[in-house]
Every structure is written in C-alpha cells, then in structure tokens.
Length: 170
Image (cartoon, rainbow, N blue to C red; front, side, top):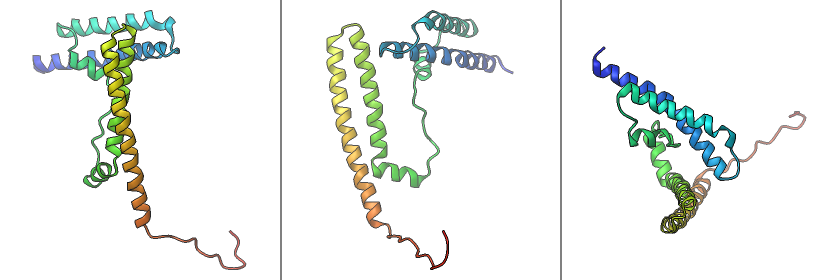
C-alpha cells in the first residue's frame, strides 16, 4: 500500500467517525432550538465531536475541510439510479421541481433560524425572501404535478370491474 493510499484510508476512517458525531450534535442542537431535543446530551455530543475532529487531525495532519464538514451535514442523499425514462417522467411531471423547492424551503428555514439566533436582521429578511420564493415554486410544482397526473388518468383506458357469474362466491 502506498503512502498516499494509507493516508486516504486514514482520512476515510476518520470521516466515518466524524460524520455521525457531527450529525448527532447538529440534530440535537436543531431539535433543542425548536423546543425538543436533549440538552443534557450536549456535553457528551460536543466531546464526541471534538474527539472525532482531533482524531481526524491526528490521522491526517490537519482538520477536516469545509467541503467534508458540509458533506457530513448534508441530509440529502443523491439519487442516481434512475433510468432515462424515469428521469424524463420526473422532469416532465414537476417532481424534481417539487423536490428542489422543498430543499430550498428547508435551507431558508435553517438560514432564518441561524440569523434569528444572533439577531442578524439582513439575513433574516433574505431568508424570508428565499422562503417566499421557494414556497411559490413549490405551489407551481404541485400544480404541474396535478396537471401531469390528471393528463395520465385521462389518457389511461377505463377499466371496469369484471362481472361475476351468478352463483359464484367471492
């Protein structure tokens, strides 16, 4: 095994330990912000997160990159196993527009909450604008979805239930 591949394996292992620690801490902080969560676990989760970051630094020689931390905290799993037909259907139906709008609403909500925590009025205003824009796009996507499915139902042949023969039990 080369030196570079050993370093890459160490980095990968360190990220495997860091990712759940970051996610648990972040999720708990978010839940606490909305009035739930477990405040009593904060110290334990912070220590676990700091320990994982220190282990990453010890293994690699420097801390995790911005991109690695953002990837660790990204709740969206990329979907890549679509056929060409499925991709076309999702695009034409408005499904992907709907999904994108939901992501933008979630991000605007996070931005708004973060700005409110530190009283950043300009960022709050921006997040509200982003939220309104995303909800408008969501409504448009829902309308596109409704029209798409209505057109599919109208184009589908009507299937009537089969008549049962007299004397046969269901």
